[in-house]
Image (tube, rainbow, N blue to C red; front, top):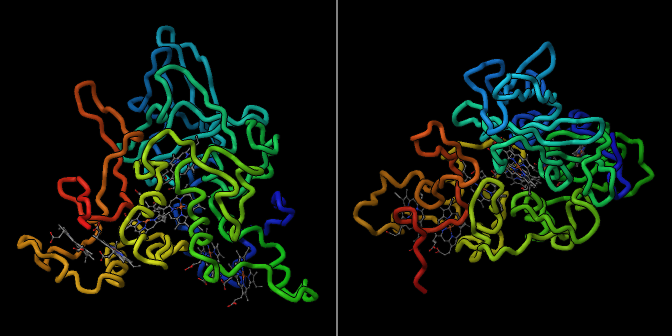
Length: 371
Ligand code: HEC
Ligand code: HEC
Ligand code: HEC
Ligand code: HEC
Ligand code: HEC
Ligand code: HEC
Ligand code: HEC
């Protein structure tokens, strides 16, 4: 197990099992835990070895193949079918809720492959943001910081694509949110009894912003400007704004997309502004996979909005159709970045993403509050 930049030793989630078994059991089924892994039969989705799922580029044809234990992306010439490139899928990024991308090591140099998997259409596509010719993107800390627990870059600032392969802790594991905890494990197993106090931070005692910052490090846009240290340096209990911020492109914080800003959106909502306690974990249990649990989320709304019947005056809103609060107040919008054109004459198909700008929407437009 690697040592964090702050000098603390990671223990690994296996070591939590004896004492936090229930949390461990549900955690391993979350998209967080499964958001990156060594590429293998268990972790990869998609129709490998199927010629109807090739990706055509201007200067080649990309194919996804499975040979023995390994998976590869090949690119062949369009005219002669000559093999131009063959790269092994080493790391898979994305649990597959929306899609998966692939990283490959060339020696210790890490790059992202041309092709990604798009769950909505069960098809391979040219990776979002890629041009339609052969291209490779270097993977730096600013790409993988939100999809792994830890990885050690050749450069302290995290700007190269050289990595120590043994330093990877895949997935968003316990210690990404709770900090490296070998000392806690040793203390609780009786090996460090000379220590007076447990080092583990009790998150429920933190101020709201510090609690938010745990989630905000990955859910508030890319935060690509590193102010201090390295993209993996921040640990729970610290102030995130001391470490990193977003480029100001003059875009509103409430712009929505995959890799979007749930924090910026939520912070602009009346619910958040008018409550001193609301945080991400008001609605989300970070140890559970809760997608699609409408009853759970309705119950959260009703904890603060006691009588929905009285809030809805319009005659077409009777109590029988009020039981899915988020369908009207946190509606889905099509992604601008994760979309694909399926045929030459068809419209693009997008994944839908849920806005966290809670409000009143009419025909997809947020209604401004009259104060
Ligand atoms: C030998 C048993 C043991 C092991 C192993 C262990 N813990 Fe704990 N942990 C405890 C005990 C006991 C507490 C205190 C519980 C309490 O105060 O109610 C605790 C508390 C915690 C808390 C703070 C809970 C709070 O009150 O907010 C967190 C977070 C935590 N552990 C995470 C972990 C993680 C992550 C691992 C694995 C890396 C781990 N623990 C391994 C026994 C253990
Ligand atoms: C600032 C944090 C952040 C960075 C940097 C980031 N991602 Fe993500 N990524 C997320 C979050 C959060 C989600 C899921 C929520 C969403 O869609 O906004 C996600 C979703 C994804 C998904 C879909 C996962 C699924 O299972 O549906 C893929 C694939 C992905 N990212 C690949 C990448 C790649 C490749 C890079 C580097 C070029 C990257 N991401 C950089 C935070 C990040
Ligand atoms: C995505 C971030 C995240 C991950 C991953 C995560 N936790 Fe937590 N954990 C939290 C937050 C946030 C809280 C505080 C919850 C609250 O305020 O309601 C918490 C609370 C806890 C607590 C104390 C409260 C309780 O529910 O008993 C323990 C113990 C704990 N986590 C252990 C773990 C272990 C063990 C793992 C891995 C198997 C893990 N956590 C993974 C964010 C995370
Ligand atoms: C290290 C970066 C990171 C941290 C910290 C983090 N997330 Fe995430 N979160 C992600 C990524 C990446 C995904 C997409 C996972 C995937 O599907 O591959 C995601 C997905 C999610 C999802 C969607 C799950 C689904 O069903 O598809 C929720 C909800 C979520 N995160 C909430 C939280 C909350 C709440 C916290 C704080 C307690 C938090 N996250 C902390 C990176 C992070
Ligand atoms: C922690 C408490 C809390 C929770 C949880 C909460 N809200 Fe709110 N919400 C508020 C407060 C406070 C206001 C501002 C006062 C008001 O308008 O009632 C508000 C305002 C609103 C408004 C009016 C927005 C506007 O722009 O006029 C809507 C709609 C709303 N909430 C819906 C929801 C829905 C749907 C959920 C569940 C997904 C939810 N709220 C969860 C506290 C909360
Ligand atoms: C079918 C769509 C729909 C559903 C479902 C729905 N609402 Fe609303 N809600 C509205 C509309 C539209 C308004 C604006 C007021 C009106 O037209 O009566 C509104 C207004 C509100 C307001 C603001 C009241 C005010 O004037 O400040 C709150 C809070 C609210 N809803 C909460 C909820 C909660 C909680 C649920 C789930 C139990 C829910 N809504 C379900 C459409 C819906
Ligand atoms: C008022 C309740 C509420 C709060 C507070 C809240 N969320 Fe959510 N979140 C939801 C609901 C409801 C969904 C949709 C779940 C589903 O699809 O089943 C959701 C979905 C998500 C998703 C998946 C988005 C997608 O489009 O696939 C992410 C990521 C997420 N939340 C992160 C966060 C983060 C980070 C915070 C804090 C900044 C937060 N949420 C605060 C209610 C909330």
